[in-house]
Image (tube, rainbow, N blue to C red; front, top):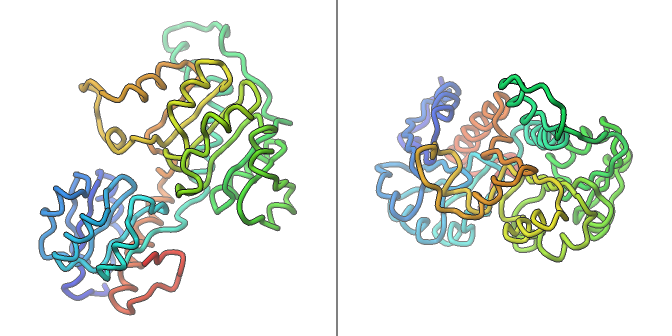
Length: 338
């Protein structure tokens, strides 16, 4: 077992039982691991004691206030166990000389397959059929779907996940359109057509979001973009909740413009997801409204949740930290943000 020096104490925030299982299983460097179920925010920084490293997830708050507090506690590394980093103030981290690393690709297939699972579930209504049959209702009324073969799917964002999703869609015999700031020659050879964003909105019967959340992509699904879309369009989001302007999508559903919506992420999910709220009154009117529609499917940031993905997340996170502690650098430059 390779032993790291006493700087190798890691405080994990927003942890679930499965985080403990996988990180303990793959801790081959003898790191000391402290797990906290709570979110990292300005109030919970006080939980960190004699710790040089914090490991955070998608809904932790790592703004300048938190980063300043971390620096005062001599934290030198913020390790994200996810690909997205829109919740981190990178300029503040640089200012306080804190390294930030992430897991840029753990299992693109996991997220891509979940996106397709949402499409198939919304289309063929298998979730409703399951509940019906359990109540001895074998009627097919209300379960009518459509052939996915031959339909036009638009993919926004063609990184590792978007590319994996395109291959799945092509395997179903779909016509695949894609939009990204950079085209991908391999995808073009496979039969994907790169078009403008407006063409995606106008032509696709199914739109699947696979882009990061930034100033350019925030609320990319809004009143204007929805107005361009085909009637009865299906929208799938397994990327980041902020890509969708929730109020506009609710209006699109009410008007019948949006025929199906599948979301694994939600704009205000940090107050909801990864928690058991079954005995609570949820105060978020938007999520309650979304879940009231029969043509909306919500999963709670589940797309990444496979054995293969969690294994890779643990391994890559530990290796990122080890590299920064021993070499002050990471071989995979995509993993190092600051």
